[in-house]
Amino acid sequence: EVGESYYLDMLRDDARNKAYLDGIQRSIQAEAARRGEQGVGVLDIGTGSGLLAMMAKRAGATRVTACECFAPVARSAAMCFEANGMGTQVQLVHKASTEMVEAEMQNRQRADILVNELYDTELLGEGILPTLRHAIDNLMAEKYVVIPGEAQILTVLVESPSLCAAHHPQHAKTQRGTKLFPEHEVNAKDGWQKTYQAESIFLDKLVERGAATIVSDAVHASSLSFQNPPAHGIHCRDAVTVTASRATTVHAVAYWWDLLMCDGDANPLATQLAGKGDRPSPGVLSMAPGQGFRDHWRQNLCFLPSPIRLQAGQRVQLRLCHDD
Image 1 (cartoon, helix red, strand yellow):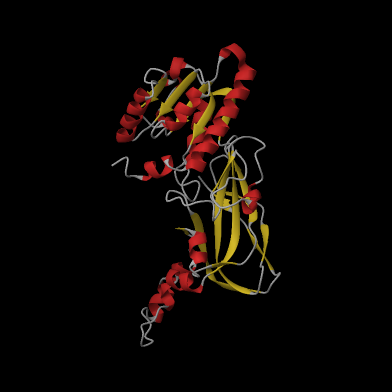
Image 2 (cartoon, rainbow, N blue to C red):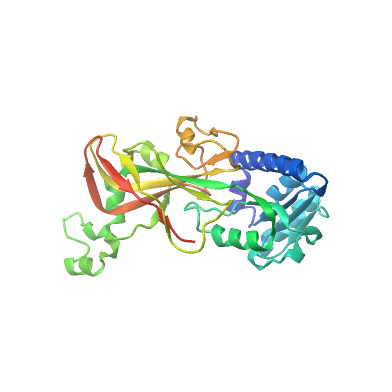
């Protein structure tokens, strides 16, 4: 069952694995040069199969602690460590990192590098921010590195009458023209017209099939630091301007994220110039449309309460807000 889940899809994601390997190798090399004979300790949160923990060990980490709270997956990780000769080299903790204490780390020492892959399509849905805050306070050394260090969120305007009609069923009619929802029921359920819930989609596939049209260039909407995660609460970023590339009716806003593994890695807008399936730089993992098929990560589509008519060159402002 574990092998048939999203874990197998992630393990087959070559771009994901190469980006993480690159970030882990560079970070361990830098920390080893800084720490010298003290060695480098790594904490892998949500180790899954144990792949990232084994990457860290092979890259030269002297201490590696891997935690996994899902029992069947933790057992799989233990078997993977054993099969790769690391059964005694990686300390596997069968619990959530937020339940761990320093004494459970390998050699009872705090880690210098934290590596994780706790990101869903919407980015924050797996609780990465509170997880990082707890780990930094309780399990990490005073000077630490988080991999990936940052997420960049990019957005485009989307025209899609057919998807909009499906998302707003209050206007649906039968073939004879009868409204499926009487007017009084529509008014009672106007929450349909106010939701901004993100729908997970393959934007490039919708475009290929003519179900959606991208009607703006990609714009960098916001950055989110994992090296210094924001405090608990609601955070609203500065508004960004998006320009319509042609006369259009905007039905939705699509967004995706790019992970920058190390400090100083490439601007995510470079993904727009990369070929299909290519990574813009060794340290960037992009969810941009056309960056290769992934069933575990997609793009997000947020429908507007009502469509907006724009002329070519007309601008709209978007503001990204998030909590934990």
